[in-house]
Image (cartoon, rainbow, N blue to C red; front, side, top):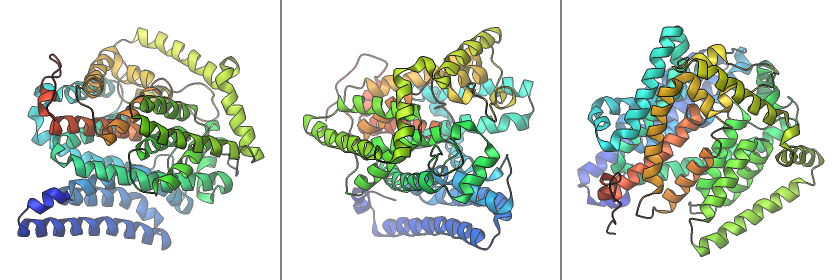
Length: 486
């Protein structure tokens, strides 16, 4: 997909070739969707469980070659919808605790890793520091993990850690497509919030059979009860907390988008976020909103206050539904009385116990240790490593790997939040999302999987904006700040 200005500057034959490539890429995406729907309708779900990851990989590879912006959109939607598809397949073909269908977004996004092999020299430059540090930390954790566990045990964790970084590197190295990537991300989150938020509200009040069946087999108390109006909404994703974090990101991104569709999207998205009962997601939205308020003009602040007022009215309206009122009031009450909140107490206790153990193993336990030694299942109330980014990092990467990874993240945040030029509206809200995620660092696992993908993708596109539009600023970032000419 090419921008209008760029399209007008291309010779006719090149413009025609680009349009033909775009058409072929869309045809491949439609084919993937058609085959998936047909397999469900014709009850070929058992085959789809294995065929969908393969088809997703092949289609993503084809689209990657023809249209980078459409590839970005395809990968985002695979992250959004694959867990939902998994539940449909499980209902028809039987429950499987380890379902290969969930590999689809990892395989599709992993194709972007080819850019790292082609432009490996970037890692040796100052601008490649964030990627070099984080990839080195992941490599260290992989070596430790393979030494302790089998390769098969380490591989899923490796994919969860490395794929977001590889995809971010692809976005950054294709920064000349920044505007196209930005529009794709905006549209994907706009329609994603509308779809996932709407389905989340429906899920709370009606709880479809495929969701109920999946909850019965997972059997986690953190999901609530598998009954209408007693479930913590997780919409099309695997759990309430990840869904809340993604919908939080979408709600913040809506602020910079034009068009009237963002209003219904914001309404259903905010309602679904409330129904997740995820305090980490609520906190992220609150912190992000406060930070965004400090970054925008007075006129924009008035618009934002209207949105906040609308959310307050929606929250008040929810009070007229007795069940929703009771659930929300109980959850909100825990903020004022954390000492009697089981989850809060377990988090404090869990972090203390974990730090004692990690101090005895400074080199870390390697990738795969979280799943092999620290997984939480059933109705256990104790904190799991996936409930804290710092615990997940220290267990998987050790003190050395965590420090190395932190250096990479710190270099990104320094470049994004201390630049001498003001970013565009999308850049402002993208940074706001990162602030919202940072607020959840001790409450959620934000560095890997779908959350890591969102964090790294938005960070990369912000870096791409700086490099593409203000290259001189980026080069001198680690030196004295300079003013860029507009």
